[in-house]
Each structure stands twice: as C-alpha cells, then as structure tokens.
Amino acid sequence: MAHKLYECNSCGYVIFVAGEQREPDWCPACRSRMSHAGDEHDPPGQDYVCDECAYAFRTPQGANPPYKCASCNRTIPNEPNKRVNHRL
Image (cartoon, rainbow, N blue to C red; front, side):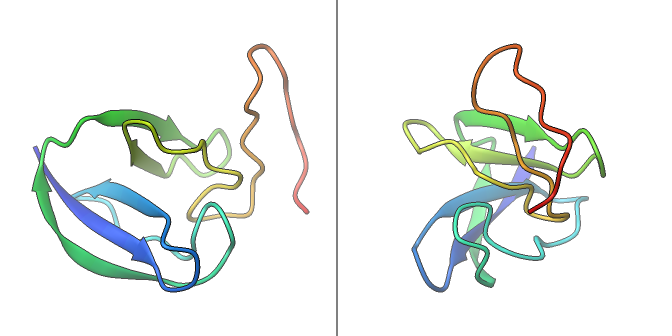
C-alpha cells in the first residue's frame, strides 16, 4: 500500500499516512506544521489509530512514540492498559 511521508517543519518528526487518508493537521510530537516529503510503498513501522477521531498514521521503526494524534488533539497513552480521556 502506498503511504505519503510527512516531516515536521520544526522538530523533524516523521510519519507515514496511507494514501486514502487526508494530510495531518500537525506534528504528533511538537504540534507544529508538517509538510509532504515524499512517497513510500509499505514502510515498516508502528501503526497508530486515534480512539477519538479514527485518524490512522504510522511512525518509522525505532522512532519515539507520538504524544498526540496528528489530526485531533487527543493524547495517545504510551503505557499499556493506561487510558487517557483528555485534551491538553
């Protein structure tokens, strides 16, 4: 499946978004704007799907986990079995 590569204009964080998804609203690490940086075919990495808005994206293998959803402002829990139901 084809993915679009997006890179943060501020911190350099990278995510992949499936071709049918819309572009991210902001960086899931620092909340700055992201720019389209290329295309990849089925890149390896960790998939994330937001519990609130269902936005799906992938981070490269070995990347730090995202802090927020790339579309809404939902905090993504990074600990197993931890639930976070707030926006900051």
